[in-house]
Each structure stands twice: as C-alpha cells, then as structure tokens.
Length: 113
Length: 109
Image 1 (cartoon, rainbow over the protein chains, first blue to last red):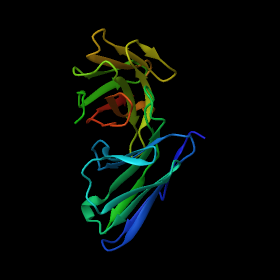
Image 2: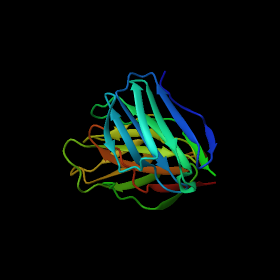
Image 3: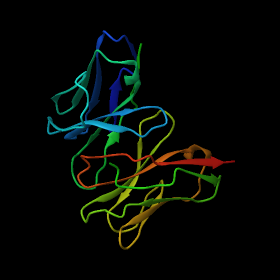
Image 4: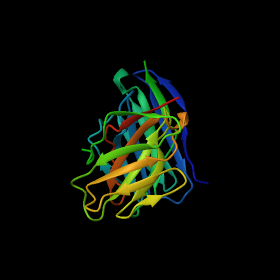
C-alpha cells in the first residue's frame, strides 16, 4: 500500500461548525504533514508530526488543531473557521530519512460558508 | 521561505524535451534536490530527486551542476498530460518541506 488516503474529499461547513479532516497511511512512515493550498498558489506547510510528536507548527491559527493518534493516522480538527480558510487541504507522509520526500494524498476541498 | 527560484511559466511543444531550470544557490551539503509536479487540483506527485549525481528514472532526468547551485529537470518527450506546475524543493530529512511558486509548464499540441 503506497497511498495516503484523505477523507472526506469535499467538505462544506458553516463558520460555527466543528469538523475534522482525516489522513491515513500504511507505509510505516514516521513523519506526517498538513498543507493548505489556495487557488493558483503553492502548498503552504502548516504542521509536521515526526514520531507522533508535533515538530513544526508554522504559526497556524488555533482554529486549526492537529492530532496524531498513532503513527498511521493524522487528523486536523476545525472549529470557528472563516470563509478565507476555504482551500485544498493536503496531507503527506514520509519515512523521515535522507533522500526520501513526502508522499501526498489527493486532498480535501474545504468550503467555509 | 523556499530555498529555490524557478521561472514562473514555460511552454513546450508536444513530443519535444522540456527542460525546467531551478536555482538553489544556498544549498547545503546534506540537502537533496527534489522535483514534484501538481496537475490541477490533485496532490503533488513525486518525480525524481538527487544529491550530487545526475539521476534518471522512467519519468524524467535530473541534471545537477557540479557546484550544486542549480539543476534542470528534463522530460524527454513531453506529452499533453505533462502540463502541470513543477516544483523544485531543497531539503535534507524532508521535514521542513517548503514549496516555492514553481513553474507552470504548458505542453502545446
């Protein structure tokens, strides 16, 4: 299994809702990432977990809350989002060693109304 | 901040080689050069990576200059399906994997 699976593929949520994005990999990778991508822009790194510990938080607002319950799963909890948070959210994983870059999922298209 | 600079856009005729340059003048000795591409609204796809030597796989070739300050991704026979944004990324352990603006490649019939 060489896939990173993200669910749901599409999500529409109101500004007062709480929702979660889920990411799963079964490649034994020890680093997992969340990226946010706005239209016609490159992916922006949000969070990195290595060995299930948060190692990078790129000053992301607290309305985005990551969680890594085990080495195969990564969640992104969403609360009180704004319309400008609408974007493609990408998850990735890597074995966290030299010379092997991340594998990406197909993303969750989030719309905040 | 991204450690690379790439042209904003390039065109290539179908069937011809596409040569995409990347400058990474501040690269460290233990940092690899990675190339990814992203076709509209899909997740980025790994293409190739290298440290010092030139590399080739079934998708592309990577040429790294001797001083490692720049590299070129070569798609030997571009097809319409190669139209995408191509990202050059420099990183060691792959943890701080930061994307720059990339090059938008248009393959023309």
